[in-house]
Length: 386
Image (spheres, rainbow, N blue to C red):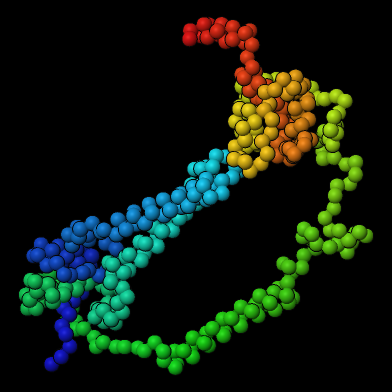
């Protein structure tokens, strides 16, 4: 006589159709505490078992939205409140730039919460003492059989009736399952502690040897000892010992025409604007102005810096002095820099700098419109029927 606590009955079937039929029979008879085990997923099994939709999705949704909100709030507080900075002309709360990080945190929290929630709340893990573990039944359904396990705690469970039902459904094997004896394994066993220390020594020793010894041996050092110089590295080839070289004096890149007034504070003449103002030129100039110029000069060139006092405000570009400048003089300032304003030649191309000049001229004309300008606008509006 078996003195162990009785868990329930298991039945093995040969085909998917038989296990689907058996699951439908049990659910239609009102059994609730049973489970189906198959070597691969079977379409229609959820309906056959009359399973309700899983609530796991709510955990995923909650933590996913929490991750998105947490990421956006943290970036908003960092970039807009704690240390506001204008980067590339972007606003303090640059939502498009924040989307990748928010997406990554959303996916991270949603994924972790799904796995942890599934294992803990739905599968009741850790549970390594389940009565089905290690049985012939579980080995069979992991290979080529299809099985049902029904618990004795089910209100409708009757050993004889369930056996008869399984037999009528075509079960090839019916087996009684009992709870195993509870086993305890003390955590601080001498063997276990010794095993941990052994693995720690082997892992740390191997890591140290690979990173500090092996990578410096031939042939593993080939990727490290290359025929090149990294930035700031000393050179034994050049007489001055410098590895970083400046371009040979007098040479220029092919297709590039150097700015002839580079480095001059007040050149005797200026270039003539080669870009005719057009819609495309204005759009390009606006884009580059808002990116590189507006952080200091303001969105409309009024000198109202967007940096909130982090940098000295420049004068407005709507003064008579600036309006009287020729286009080439503004281009010269953008290219060469002036006072505390650095050169923007490395950030913008020649065409983009001329487009900025055209856009500045449009802002100046909009802020200092003459009567003839207003009359011209009225004529265009009347011609367009506005």
